[in-house]
Amino acid sequence: MKTSVSLSLFKADKNAPVLFQGDIETNIPLIREMGYEGVDLFVEDPRAAVSRRAIGLLESHGLETGVVMPAALAGQGLFLGDREKAVRDEIIVRMKEIIAYASEVKGMVSLGLVRGSVGKGDAYDEFFRRFQDSIEKILPFAESCGVELVIEPINRYEINTLNSSEEAYRFIEETGLPLYLMLDTFHMNIEDRSVLGSLRLCGDRIRHIHFLDSNRLAPGMGHLDMEGIYRVLKEIRYDGFLCLEALAKPDGETCAKKGIEFFKKIGLL
View 1 (cartoon, rainbow, N blue to C red):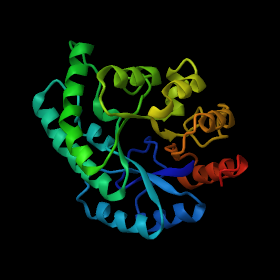
View 2: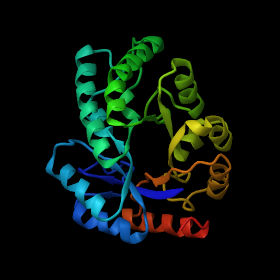
View 3: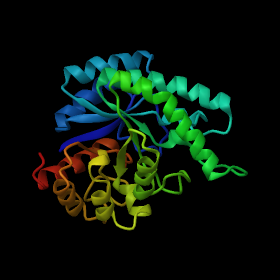
View 4: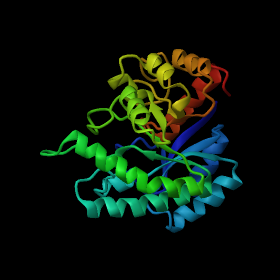
């Protein structure tokens, strides 16, 4: 397993789970110096100058990219399951731009907040029909770029679709879509009957882990048994990233250092 942190290439909301943002010329070397091996990238515009500079900086400092996070599109009101066809058409175009960028940094792309919620007067089956249709329009391009798409279950307070790991797992199984899972222990602690049980259920569908304590901070800063979770990940032979997509509390660097302390304690670093 490898370690990574969240890095935003644009000014994110203060409550976003982003440890580092702005000044990538300082933050990217700092992340590597601290001992992390990769990042999850929050990207707003793949064509922006900062997005282009990030590619070279990550490469020159030996940092890999786990997942490219398109959450900024959701912040702009763009959702893959939206009732309006014009909105779905626009996000499909924007997602293809994100996917092309992900291919450059050799990362995956998240289908998290961008899937959207079921609104008043809408029906769940109609939402999922639209969501699946949008995915099917994106998949051929993603496959041509060699980019995997990962569904992230997100807790009910942020979205009302695919909240639990089991729901996301069943969606993939039932649709037969070539999708994978990005599980987040913070969300799992809220929605899943058993974090450990969900990890075992999802098994080889898991491509990425957001490795967070109960309070969405670094392991050891909350009350989850993070060492027990790590042991189960070893048991199921997960070999991807453990990413601190955490809140920057008390600040990003301090939280990232706490993560390094934990990873050293369990022998990962």
